[in-house]
Image (cartoon, rainbow, N blue to C red; front, top):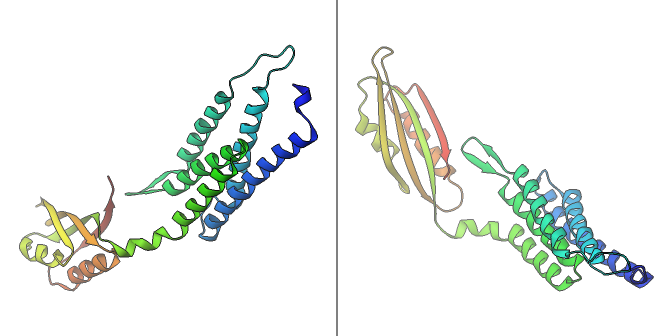
Length: 234
């Protein structure tokens, strides 16, 4: 086994690790530019660490005098498991929104890029990195080109005796579908809690719908006491 560790092999292994660090740092730079918490250093280390583990798995699989041959796939499998824990820590639920899915996906792909570099497949590593950068930098602009659905919950606190049909008509506008309406009347405090489940059809941002609905309800003479606008995710 010791005969395998020539200077040429050491240089080759270091080149693999450096390439993984470079590609991981490149993807991390894109995330850094867009203000994400996990930036260039984080992705550089993930890529480099994955490549190093892959190189070690190759080294320990080489038979030598008095040494037992080891399955190189075991270390590689543990890389995937470890990145799963790292990615899970990046995903957070913020109210009705889920954040960190793209960051977790980037950890996963950078680990795969590092493994490809560690195995000596620079073609796969570079190609995957280019596709990843295109997906992160360019595909987000395609949101404005197609219609998609979003789901919102509108909670209103109104006085008793309010005209429910009038409120529903105020909420209705182009691109808004009311899925259901729930009414809860509090006779002791003399108010009605009205919950509307909305489905929005939109291109790009949904701000125009929310602003239009909130403005219409605020301007109307319906005695509005409280309004809550929240996102729903499935």
